[in-house]
Image (cartoon, rainbow, N blue to C red; front, side, top):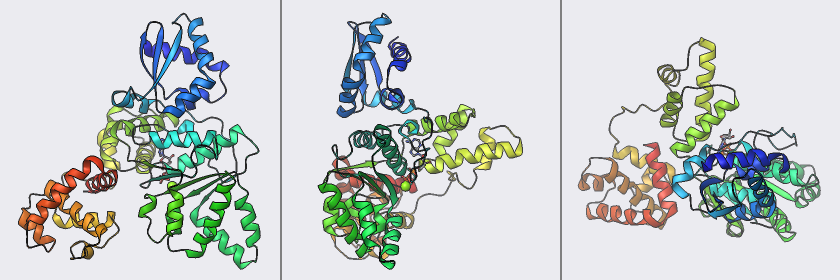
Length: 438
Ligand code: ADP
Ligand code: MG
């Protein structure tokens, strides 16, 4: 069948392809069908399509002919979309030999990154930037919740770019480290060294840029670093836990620069991706975990990949320490304090208010106040919508909980958010996050 054909082609072509090509570029292709001697492959985006076409197509097609499987390949973007996403998520790859460049974690490679629906665009954009620093998207801005793979991708970009060009000057820093180095340099009268170093990078990766909020002199310095690098067509990659516009207390001129290149987000991994990640992480540790335990973990630790990894590590450690087998019962015992108790009582309006307030960085007081700034009003409407969806409370009860005498306000909020969910990614995000925390 065509799946096997593709596997065979990859296997036979590997010795002729550049090192890493299979893991990084080819394993995320999804074979769709064979027709008239052509094997159709679905690829994640145009960038990857062009790369494969230019760099590997000839060898792949020759191999295909040699094996007697047909005459050629056809690449298409997005045909496989949903139905193939799961398969893509399952295709992962093993880290290559660990290069130990300072500042970069040797485990965070493209080849150890599982690609799924939730991160495929961020992954593709990162690859594009790693292949052509300064040319593809500048800056690349990756945002998403904690533990979803932003840092992993940034390191992967650094490794990959260095692999292509050993002489590239690459630096990965957290924005805290950037701040601290700046402060030290000011204290020691060494600001020109600090500037020199950062402004002569070819690829600068700054993680968790939201921590620059409120730090005016660091922002000022970073502004100049940014301009200098950008002018020279040097690549800048930034990450944050939220989109540029939502980072409070950051100067507008920085926010607008963050949006010059490409802003892309990483979502929480869907169920299939969680399964794929668990399977690969277990495999990587040479551990075989019963499939029902993998499912148990994927179902019960839905929040982020770091926690998922933590849960897996805990299960393996407990099994070893207690010399007990890994079963669903044991796993649920060992993970008692991590796994959410699903038999908890019904969701309350109070709880929803708390969670929405937290998610939108307001206080509950703001949320139930009569303040009307558009951001608070939106958060309030989201909270009302979630209350309608997840509690049994009446319109009047919900209205009262928000100090609204007129219950049509609640109805209006519900309708408005329902409409926005279809076309407003940000609102959808907030609602998703709130529902996850419920
Ligand atoms: P963030 O920076 O977004 O908080 P990290 O990049 O630190 O998240 O990721 C948390 C952990 O999860 C790391 O150990 C990382 O290797 C792992 N991880 C995240 N995304 C993936 C992925 N898609 N495939 C494999 N491991 C992942
Ligand atoms: Mg991080």
